[in-house]
Length: 497
Image 1 (cartoon, rainbow, N blue to C red):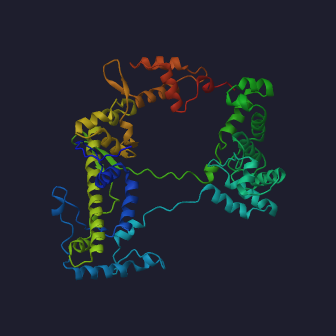
Image 2 (image 1 turned 180 degrees about the horizontal axis):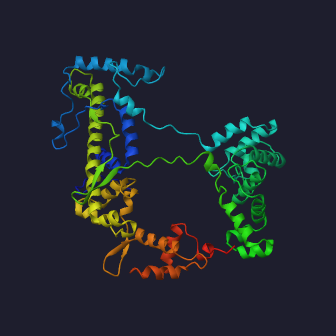
Image 3 (image 1 turned 90 degrees about the horizontal axis):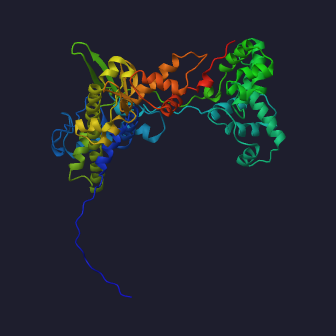
């Protein structure tokens, strides 16, 4: 065996993404709400980044080393810089020590922009288990049921249903509860906690619990004729499968109920909750905040876009820390730390500028290509690929994708997700194109106009759409019907009372 060492010269190309480019792409992809949180986090982490109502932002047209960083009141010399540090320590001492509430005002009585921006992060609300456990502690139940009942509550899913078995409950709690005790605890949770239907093992049991609560007068949200409630209970208990399959004539025959009473019971069931847990703790759906506002300019007969970033603080790089980074008398370790923060602050401000410019360019291009949607509505949405917009703007398709990701537009036709304007489609009979969203809208319109006594089949829906100059297959109708939550023709059929 012999080992040899040799040297070889090889040329090649490698693509390496520098941190500056990575940050720019991340900021471009952020909706305005996430960008607010990112800025608040950077303001807390980066000592060189400031939020100010009178900040001087970076002039991106000039080289980075020539850009003005500070304002006219920027001081010179390290002595003034250290005096500024001592002032900051006095101003933010309470917040850093944690002995008192953060102060949102400076010593001169003015509000501190950095503190205000950091305080804008939303608080997390209570989840379903936390809310129900609070009520369970106040429930008037036997002491032996407290612990198993709490285990049941903690095992509920977001809909408020219990899918865990008794064995799984015992294993998760590490307790030796028998099935009798767990069954008693389950009944107690179902009867003591609101709204009715909580802790059911499936949707059917949840509906039965809600009907029983309405019959007992414990559910004020469901007011109905007692006969209709009794019939609803009969359908749930004995004819659940036929009801799901809309086989109402079979229920009429087997339950010996006239169709009028079945219709009344069905109306009761429609008012019940399929997911009672959502009423207690709705999903933490963040409010939709528009990134772009589009308005119609009647004088020029065009739609004009503007960024909705008025809630974002004005950022600048602290002139004090810029001078500290350049001051040779500053400790080398401190100078290195401060220089890194200054550089990071500059990159963030530049990334925000790039986000604004790119997003506006993409939106303006969309407005020009999808003008018919703004004039005539969703049925006029044409086919538009991201590659078309990217080619017109001289950008990559990935950049366009990041620019529209998660962004919303406030338009004269309501709040619309920006990605919705990019869609595939088909050619129409007149040579134009129709986007898939427009075809979905056609499917909905055809179904809404049908006779529910004789609903249209999927083939018939495709034929109606073909009459509008668009040919699609039956399986395409099925796919879009399911996406829209439209049941099949058999399930849409309305049986006369």
